[in-house]
Image (cartoon, rainbow, N blue to C red; front, side, top):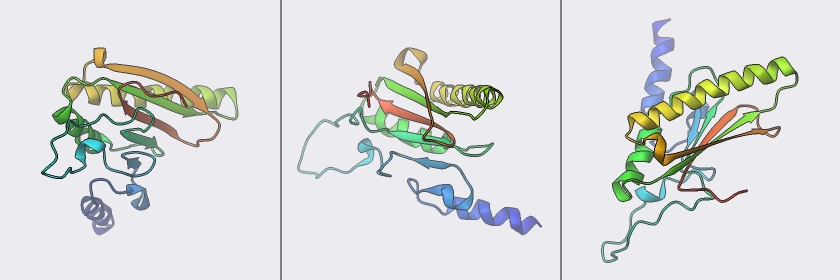
Length: 161
């Protein structure tokens, strides 16, 4: 039985930093809807001297999907924030929490409570990375097109969809 638990852990460790890790039962954590690395991590030609451009406000730096009880997002969040902060120290962020709509009032309440705890966990992790509350703008939305809570992090203020 011990080998059953070791195999998923080893498979998780072998994945690339910006891959879709949902295939092995782990949370779906990806840099943006198009699964591209954060712009700050992209290479520029050595001959060009240019200031790093901020992530377009309409594209998420990172989207965390809470599709299971324990979602391990800390490493991906740290990588994304470190990449942005190394190029643009003091950047502000917008955190958008999307919660699915439940079928009953009880289910809505349960989803809202769970979503609040997940959002607190993400905000706490941002604070631990040195991104204080003064640099974070938080909004919450509900959506009937998703089945699990999604928390998206944008660099700067996002453009309304």
